[in-house]
Image (tube, rainbow, N blue to C red; front, side, top):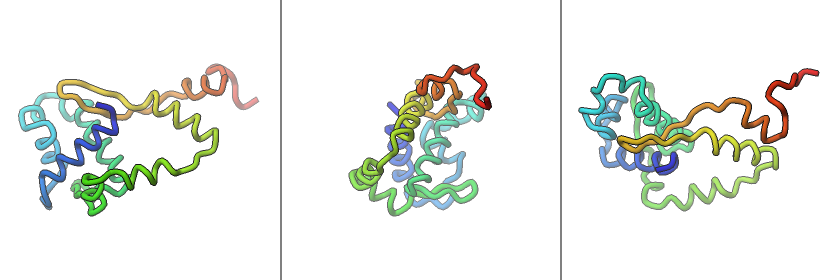
Amino acid sequence: MDFVDWCGFVLQKLIEEGRNPDLDEIRLAQIIYGEDRRTTAGFWESSLRGGMLDAMDALASVALVEIDGNFFKVTVAGRAFAKDPTVLWQEICEIELEPDEERILRVVNQHSPKVGSDPEHGWLEEIDREPLLAEYGIAADMDMLD
């Protein structure tokens, strides 16, 4: 499951939960992973929690969910997307990028998304500058201020 599929899975779980006004991080973890997994030692520092929150941030960035403090809510657009994702994907794919933007996005997309197992989930990691520098043929130890 890649990060996009993971976000779709999280969105679907939110929709299945219904219009719960008390849908916070704890309840979200329960519906995605189950109570046993949520209460496991180390859960709050794990990639499971990180992936859950990364998915929420990604979904919020395209207005499919709203984050209000510690509470989450699926938007009308989120419910429509779950029924037919074509419109949003078409909007995203029609964005014209400059060549440098495209190169950077390709590198970030290769290095940032991660996939975990048990259960399968996704998350994003910040990438070091080295892959970006390598894309442009710049040595990592090169002094860029000269």
